[in-house]
Image (tube, rainbow, N blue to C red):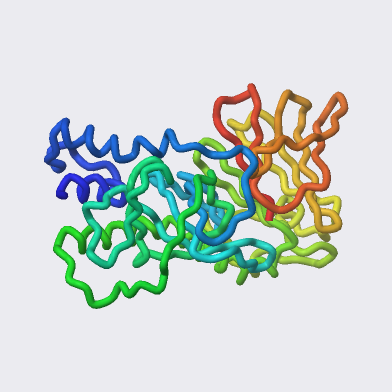
Length: 320
């Protein structure tokens, strides 16, 4: 069991020196086999509506609502323990992580022995239930009923089992952080008309647009290190719907402008280049162009990916 503990600790301790992890090649092979199903389970291209008892993989990285880049070293898979609920038009669910390390189960833990469900037997971590935003769910895998009425308190566990639970609960902060960041942002959003996060080469920059048609003094609102105001606010002029949030970075292959009008967003790319804009469901968004620019109108808030031959790096934006 020691090799399992060391393997899981690597996701919260960062890179560990090889001589600090005493496992042999047979151990490594066995652990890799545990996760073999994660790359081979069947998924469907048209995602079903999210509901209780479904099993989903979780994205290994995401931009949170504080404009920060979150990343995990290990693939996570969860079983939904509630139907989605909405807060300010954003969906969240409660979920339990599932683990292939059934060796760490106690007598009260729920184990699925049927390998056909996800590709391997798994342990349902009922004691590790977490809230998360549905936008960080990635691929639908299947369904499995989880009995949440089973008591998980006052049981005898070994030292290895205790360490396993502590590490898994710590790793699951990656899940509930999505909701915590969102709630923190709710307390600040009334100060802004809209905001845009740009993630490029694993660096995130956030720009804020104050409410339209108001005289605004940016110094009255405290911004975090990765945030700045739109150009219109910085120069102290009156804000209207024609003002935009713009990104023109040194490494960025083109200029990006975002405007908000009548509750929807307009994204403009200058100059005209060959690009594809994809939403969070990997559906391509169609735009229109002239000789100078490409314009995508009527966008809703959410996460979009810009794909272009101009760079090998992923360009991700969140409109909020």
